[in-house]
Length: 553
Image (cartoon, rainbow, N blue to C red; front, top):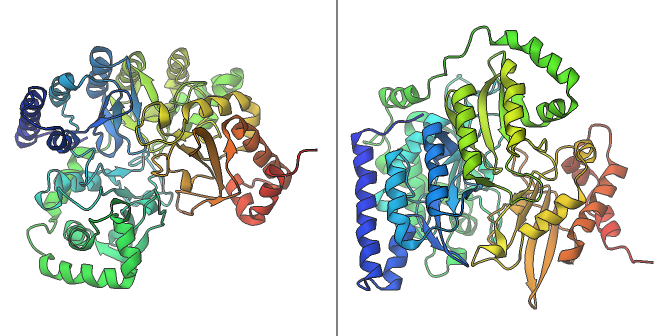
């Protein structure tokens, strides 16, 4: 992974001391609330319903064990012994004291971490596929390109005050696990007819009040032109994006208003002025960054552990169930990628305790070259585990409630914190997640219905990406009572689509029962090996509507 140089470290250290002084002056009454708001947002600090919330940057979801142990220490020392992973692969502390945040930032800086640009109208954390670098079908590892973008975006003076926040995702595989088509910019590594690697560029995706799928603005961008082209897009947006209405300020609104052809024309004109300039990426610079992501020293004889693995799978059905749902193929024979489930029964999705953070760090050191990845789905990944070590790893994960075999199933939910924490939320989400877990606790049933993405947001801002879930749930307020709107048919993957509302919102107590009716239709109507999303697309919404809203006899 990328390692700070002296300049990087000095920049982060200086930012800590700047914010320490700003906090001191605010608490002394020397800085008014409205002025301090902008300063704290630049440093990742929100004010939530009950307490401040600090969002820590985890660039493209990659951490080492030293950093994860520091996060555990911060959770114990400054918070309530836990933290929360988000869909941008960042980490949040929900209960820090405002006066102690500078101390937290100083501790983060010790391990090359920070909270810069995790909030505010700026370029946010660039995300990617959590299996990047280990996939057989991968055109190229996307992480070096994320790092190049990170360095370009960090404290970029021209884009510090954009019309609204701005998000970029990169993927290098035929499968899109980064939800790239619902980002402001989506970058797909592709090969042209000459075999050259470059980028397909999408622009204008996003969710929230006006969900949109991104549009292709460039079918093939040479890799050396990446930063100049991104700069051109951002300049056009910065100049033309609306600032009079925050709900109409995202780039998706501008692209939709102008049309993709006109927007492309403006970008090309801007690009012509800067292409080939100082931001042009040289081969030497690309190779320098790629050098931070060299393959790990894999064991040549790791494949010898497969026989022992197969024996354990045959004799232990619980381990076999976990292996099937929570591990993935690796391009190196004898290795598997392990998904650590942060969706335990009746616990908030994405939450992890200080003890669990330490356990994951220890396991990473012992079995995974000290590397940990956070995912868009609010889980963790140990990407390089030898087959012969999987059983021992699973035993430790199970002991610490990190081995629920539910990855990709209904209970592997993406859920925002909702009304329990967020000051913007209209409805609760965590108690509804508990209701769903209680209703669908049968693993055989979950595994039988197969891959389903269920996402639930507590407001229209769609932090949990409910628009692009196979089953989306949106909490709404009805005269002080929580109701939930159900959508079907969304996807954030390579077949990206927006879900459609099946009918009127249902009260909180009926959410799980409503899902059961939806799933009954799927079970009755599915064809052999057909996924839920494919059944919905084939038969349409009508059978689901009829079942959910059928009159009660």
